[in-house]
Amino acid sequence: MTNNATALTTMSLGKLTVCTYGGFAPVCHKNKDGKPIGYDITFLEKFAHGLGLDIVWIEHDFDDIWTMPNENLCDIAAAGVQQRDDRHVGPGGSWSDPYFQVQRSLLVRSADKAAFDDYETVAGKTIVVTRGSTAHIDANARYYPRCTIKCVDELVLEDQPDAQEYIVNRLIKNHKVDAFAEDDVDAFAEGDVSNKYLCGIYGKGCDGDLALADIHHIDGTNETFNFITRNASTGLLGLLNAFIANNKGGYPPG
Image (cartoon, rainbow, N blue to C red):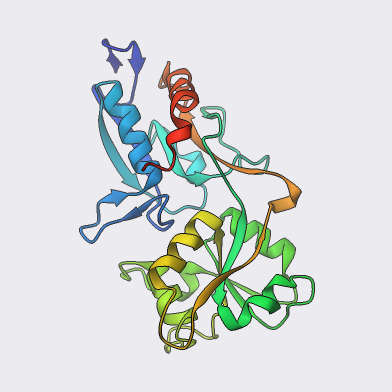
């Protein structure tokens, strides 16, 4: 349907439908009521409201979220996604311009920081990643086969309200695993923006402090966040790129 006020076509008249993933605090996560919050959420709410559109959020697993616009499930996919040649958005999707930049990192117990900083020799550790994420790609290339790489969905039950909190506060910080998990967890691989946030929230107490280790650029390149737009939502990509150009200096907000 066409929004006459902006000459923009979206899936639903007067609405911008966005697919997101709720497990990357502070970029995109959920509050205690299950409502999407975070930097991406605030950024796109400002974009939508500036066009006079209501915003509709659809939560999806991170893996392959970049294909959702091509499948006509949303106008935009937003989850701190890096544009990569191996992430195929399909003929019906397009990458936006970049709006933020991050580096790779590991959230670890402070006592383990030196071992992980020496990434070429670290061995026998278990690193947790989000399936299909840039952290997953990077960890497989950087630490495998010397370390065990596990995905969040292998360790966290579906009804766990906050997977990040469970992994950091229960599995890493306490160095204790319940019967559902098979291994101790030593590190959480995420972008530095997420791990800095988690370190600030959960970094003190229990058996020791938390720290960020092995902060680096993936493949020696700058890693950016990009949105994915639905090509059938005509006019959307141009408007979004113009918004990014004028507002990315305010990301993250505040």
